[in-house]
Length: 109
Image 1: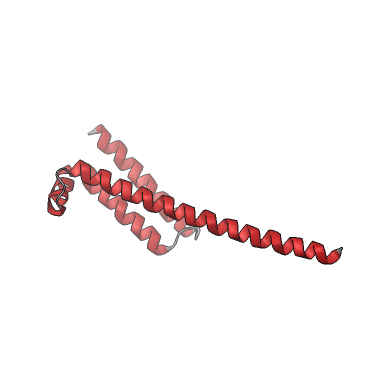
Image 2: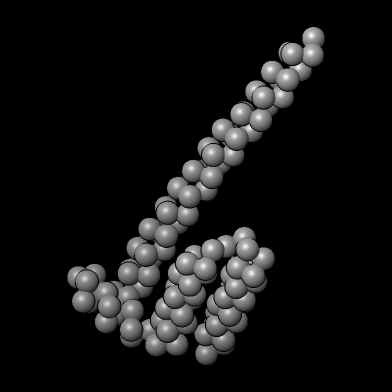
């Protein structure tokens, strides 16, 4: 019971953070709703663990805990890929800015 309360508090804190970032326009509405659905799913599985087992059996996975782990791994891969894409995009933007500034300095000489 204590673990469920602590985990629920963490879920609600993450939900609050997502919507705060949405109000700051750092996260789009679609992304905020997607995270909210994930948080609600986490809360449901936290308080009703048999739900994960039921869904796992429906999709052909033996245990609910395995389903949660598999979904977590997929989510981590997606997030790491998004970070990689953002990193590459920032690198290209920085290269473009530095190149433009260098060409401006070349014209002055």
